[in-house]
Amino acid sequence: MTTEAAPPTGGAGSAQASPSADEFARVQQSPEFARLRGSYRSFAFPLTVAFIAWYLLYVLLSSYAGDFMGTKLFGNINVALVLGLAQFATTFLIAWLYSRHAAAKLDPKAEAIKKRMEGGA
Image (cartoon, rainbow, N blue to C red; front, side, top):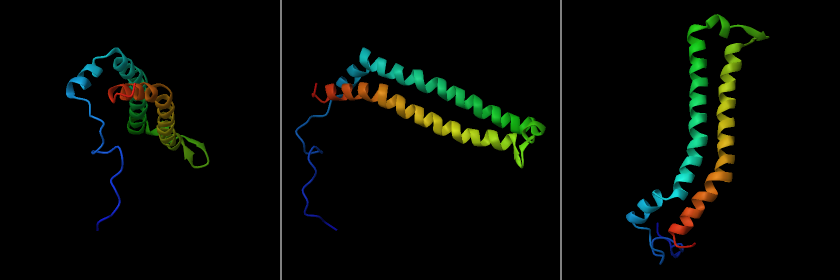
């Protein structure tokens, strides 16, 4: 199937030149990029370590503390079910927190670097 539509503007045929490998390397060494990377790492690394520790605690408790995990809290709801559901809640909480962090701290810095590299600023 073919189409008669013209190609979108700003694509491969646009006049805007792509940054060279040297320009990418120069930006990667810049203090501005280091701040962007630091902002990402200061958020992502601690939360990743905390979540992995939380997950491993759940796995270890499930493997070695069966009596504790089988403790009924109310009705047929036991500790294992509550902690298992908390794993899902934690995952969504981290995703939401990262989304907020990225929108507030990472995206503006990345957009500024992108505009500078594309010659817009």
